Image (cartoon, rainbow, N blue to C red; front, side, top):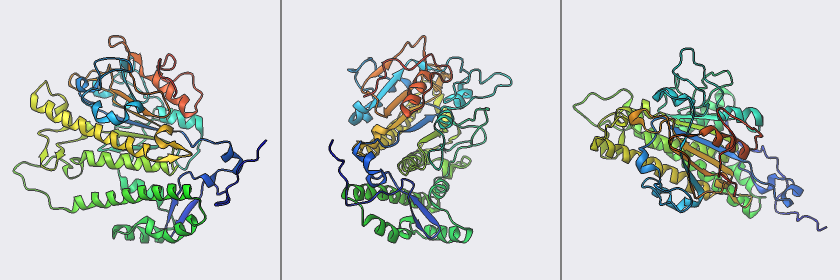
Length: 437
């Protein structure tokens, strides 16, 4: 038997290695030198991850769903934005949660499938992310991260405990950044935060340690580390940019501003930033499971582009009644979401781990508890599955008048994550025709 090749460019480094500076610590991505030599020879795989995203007002169904089923379907107007990744995603129709009806009341049940949310005395059940975390154990600093955009934290969340208790979402990117990367005693933390406030950088304080660490790495690991540092730097720049937005003078108007419009009107910028934070959390192995609720229901008049605001809040727009102007604004909002998803897929596809794209190791689910917000319809939910090493490229069309349980897809996701579960929620098995690549 041939002996395994032993790289002399770098020695074995423990997986949970951090760079440390004054008041900060930075987890590192998975590097080749972090695997034992014999494990490297066997070609071990990097961790499997899962990102679960929901917009609680969904999207307009007609431009989202393809007309034909199977692998040769024509991309719908919305999915055309993802054409570059046609072989990396699957769109599903005819899925919903049996017994989960009641319009907006179902938003907290998207990842739980708990029946009867409008019943007196209703108690939610455990969400998919928490179920997976229970089964997997604490493999990372944070078993899961629960994030939100414009979210009403006291009343809405994708993440729920086994006892049906709401787990509040983190809706502040700077707070999440500090939670992930800043630590030390109070004085050190205060000094570091002041430096960041003054447009310093967490990477600047770690520069010396980073240079010393990377000196003994092989070329592949150095490239991986550089790519990771670039991600951190991009997030920092966006945090600074977001703060600058809040410091800019507000435009004058004859109308009274909606409550919290200063922050909430930038919903797509905030969504983009939270997607980047989720990616950074997964890439740094701070966690392997992230949930993200885009609380469109709580979003007032919002910015469509640099020169145009919507004519109404997101919720009122969703009850468009086929009004042309409202539908046009919703289409614009939906297309921006698709563009953000494209950016996410592009970023994950461009990062390599152990010879594989990070996208192939990360399962991404995008969907909603509403199939049609205009009519409060909770059937035929818009479901998009990407990455994760599944055999993609098809439109899986199930019966629109007798929906398949969405929990069947959840069981498939659990298995892909390494959780041996035969059932979850209202499942009747795994999702049919969804195969591994």
